[in-house]
Structures are given as structure tokens and as C-alpha cells.
Length: 282
Image 1 (cartoon, rainbow, N blue to C red):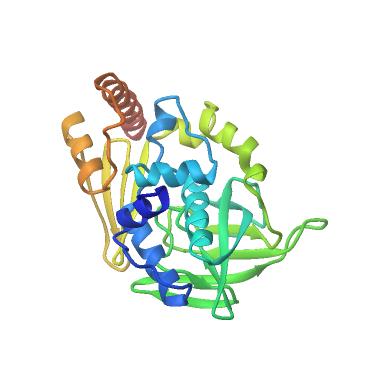
Image 2: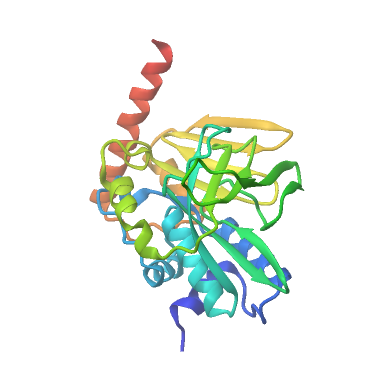
């Protein structure tokens, strides 16, 4: 009998994940990033899904996506079901490459397998395609350069780690060593998914990572970013093209959206895009 976890694995294209191994962990992260998009579609429609990990797994099995609390939460549940040793951590994604803040706006993971610890994150959209060793150093994946450093926190705060990604949409991720639970993210999730001041409410986004680079749709602008080769951009022409791109390129099923939902989403995306475009010409 099919279960949500088995359906999630089928979406990843993995029929036999095998026993926990570093190779298996890497394959699972690659598959998740390529097949489960980062998106805030339901937040844009005013009905954000909860972040219970089992709910996220059911949503992934049904072809949906989410943002970090959903993506890393559901992925952690999958890994634990498969026998991996997973720890959740409170983190923060920052546009200041020097910041030592951990604001709770990000859920990230570490996984211990075959005697080694790895930093694992499928919730950044354009983060690393594979896990990184949880030890200080510089790392390369394809054309991307990354670094892991110990976090020296402000006085009175707990220590942790920093991930640096000079070419990512946010250059720094800080997270604490201490284990976290889903409950630690509930209050921030409410703010991030409902407040008019939240970037997840203000800006529509869908992102998907592969071995070579990342595709992102922000507003009506579709961007392909490849490290070392730059970016290509084009503006989508209308709702039909937008929904075709979401279902095709980003592999996000939209059968949960009614015609009214689609009209409302396009109207919101188009209005925000026009405001953005006007600001660039002021």
C-alpha cells in the first residue's frame, strides 16, 4: 500500500533508497532540489500551509512545494523515516555577509552518517546541490564556491555555524549548534507567511536547483543563473505562460488551484511586477 513517504520517494525518482549512507544522502538531496520547488504560492493566495513535517511530506507527495520550514521539515522527516540521524537547527538567512545574527527565520539540518556530520539544506532554493561537510573549509560544487565557518556569536548567544555563498541570493546562513523542534519555528512562520511586511507575502517566488545552476521566477521575471556563466532573464507574457512554466520547468503541480485562484494569483503577481518595473524607471 502506498504511503506519503513512498509517494514522496516516487516524486524524487528514488525507488530503493537503501540503508543510510553518505551516497544515499547526497542522492536524496540532489533529487529533492531538482524535483520539489521552493515556492510561496499558497502564501500569496492567503492560505499558508502549516509546517507540521508529516503535512509537508503529504504535500510533496501530491506535487506541492513550500519554503524552508516546509522543505527542510519534510525532508528531515523523510530522512528519519529512512533511518538517518537528523538534527534540526534554528538559523537565519542574511543579506549581510558579515552578520552574526541568528534570527530564527530559517530551519536548517545536520545529518550524521557513516561517522561524519554533514550540513544539509533543501530550503534555500538556490543553495548547494549536495550536502557539505560540517567542518570549517572552502568547498566547490561544479562552478559554485562555498565555505563553512564556525560562528562566533555576540556575547551571551549560543555558538554555531556559518555557511557562505558569495553568488547566492543571500550570501550567509547562520545557525546554532543546539537542536531545535518544529515548535521553535511556529511564531516566525506565522509572521513570515501572513504579515504584510514579510518578503514572502510581498514577493512571489518559485526556485529550483540543479547540478549546473538555478532557475527562479520572481514576479514575472524568469531567471536562469549558472555560476561562472552569468544570468539570463526574460519577462513572462501572461498567465498562461506563467502557469506552464511553474508546472513544466519547476515541476510544481497546480491541480490544487481553482480558476479563481489562478486569476487571483496572476493579478497579484502582475500588479507587484508593474510596481517593481515602475520603480526601476523612476
